[in-house]
Length: 547
Length: 48
Ligand code: SF4
Ligand code: SF4
Ligand SMILES: [Zn+2]
Image 1 (spheres, each protein chain N blue to C red):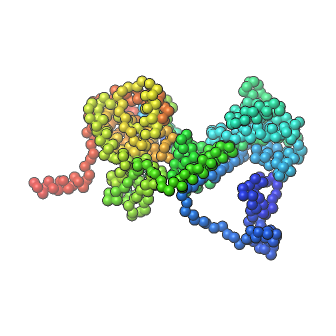
Image 2 (cartoon, each protein chain N blue to C red; image 1 turned 90 degrees about the vertical axis):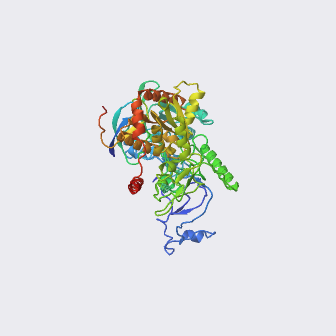
Image 3 (cartoon, protein in one colour; image 1 turned 120 degrees about the horizontal axis):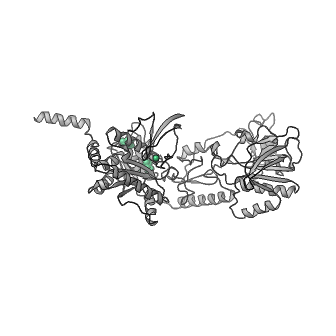
């Protein structure tokens, strides 16, 4: 942090685990032992080897726990708070160092500009958190309680300090947290609901002035302070991208790792055998991190001690005789479960396949079979559903986890919606191929709805993005064929959105009523599969020979 | 950054927005909340 100097051999921080020294190779003179080499002389364990080099260690493992932590938000970009302009504006991390007995001032809390003890300290909350304007809309989870703890520390060490905390909301929901908050208030800390627009400095005294609209009292408050602490948020660690590439992990819109399921599998990564512990999955405090780490360790133990693993029967298989080695499927699999190299047949690693069916819908050569959701099975369902009075029906493809469950929710909630819909379930909306949708129109469906999970809920990392690509392509195709593209609809409906399911079904019924028998007949004709060129040529040739 | 054009396939509402390559955005119509959002690279012909 640049608050003090350290030696070329040091323990990273007092509570570091393991509590071992590390060499700062940029500043160590030991590389040339003639110049120094003192630490090697005094180390009785002979633990120092200046010639030791970084090396790549390859290990085969059965499971991986990702616990790469967090980075702290740098408030430089929020220039209104003057972090780089005013010496007495510090971050909460710098506060920790200044008040720490092992810190640069031996725990004597002083302000940087004149090394005197500040008597009026302001804390500004949510710096870099809950702020969509700077691309950080999420709550960092720990900053409110950290500030409350800091105010209690100050009250304990320096009872004569007057502290002001400027906040949006105080989130004190953990065990004993509310108690700490109340204690802080009883100690005289002023909590002002509202954030200042900026900070000004009195150049003579180095004091800082904040003006806040107290949204509780409706009054404007002006505070002159000796020091301001920016309660900075946390951000995803910078190595997250690298690790996500290595382990095929995906991120939520906040930039943290996405878990397999937010409620039921909060420790598992969507990639089998990978687990999360701590902040890299989402902002959380020490207690939650410890709980998650324990859960991850138990999961690893259960996996490795089981002796054998059970996989879902719903996986894809590739027929090497039909595979043309195009590699499209390998590029689309969210789990990197398909091995393919140029000039080679693609192959599915069944233990890694999650069974979304995205590859099956993408293979134009019919080389991929999704067990239990084969093309033949699904097309047969489409045809059976639309065999009688297809013009009366709204044809719905619903994904297993969200939209199908949303339909269930609508039913359980006794919500009313038109009875015209006929739902076919696939594991993921990405299983729905273009051909299946066209087949429904060919069979006379007036309206086809493809529905799946919301982006953040996709149970197959991000397979449903392929659904969007296909529906976009289909809209173009339908338009080209003179079929009204609006007859194909797309909706994201979560398992909890029974209301939305019912609303969408009502809208579909209204849309269905606008589709004329002529339109249905035209679509049946216009979307007929075109015979393959070679086939046409061969047939023409055969005909000319026989005639 | 590029400009893309969007049309809601449920209510017909049209708008344009900045998009970046690799954007991962769930799109919703601001008028009717539908997710049937068709994207165009250039301004689409007005619907008759
Ligand atoms: S998409 Fe089909 S043809 Fe292409 S590599 Fe995969 S299995 Fe083979
Ligand atoms: S079904 Fe899904 S997870 Fe399995 S190989 Fe195909 S794309 Fe990958
Ligand atoms: Zn709309």
